[in-house]
Length: 91
Image (cartoon, rainbow, N blue to C red; front, top):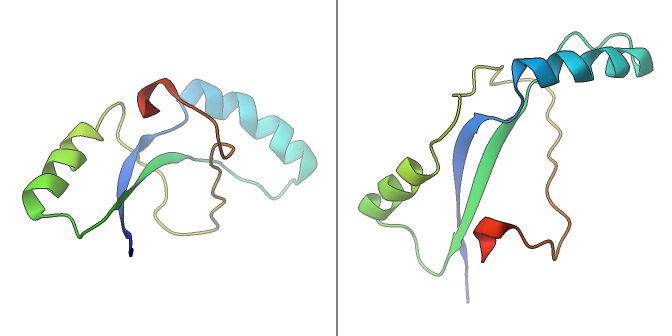
C-alpha cells in the first residue's frame, strides 16, 4: 500500500513571550543566533490523494491560533513527538 503524505502549514508555535524567554539562553550557547521562530506543520497520511474539497476542509480545521509571520527560508530544525506518544487529539 502506498501512502500519500500531505502537509499543512500551521500557525505560530511560539508566543512572543516564549520567544523572548528562549532567545537569551540559546545566544549563550551560540552568540550568532539573532532570533528564533517556530510554526506548526501537520502531516496527513492517506491511502489515496486528497480530493480538493477534503484538503480544503482539513486546511480549515488545521488553521487556528496566531498566524505564522516568521521567515519562510533559512535553517530549519524539525522536532516531533516521540514515537508512541499519544496526544489527546490523536485518539
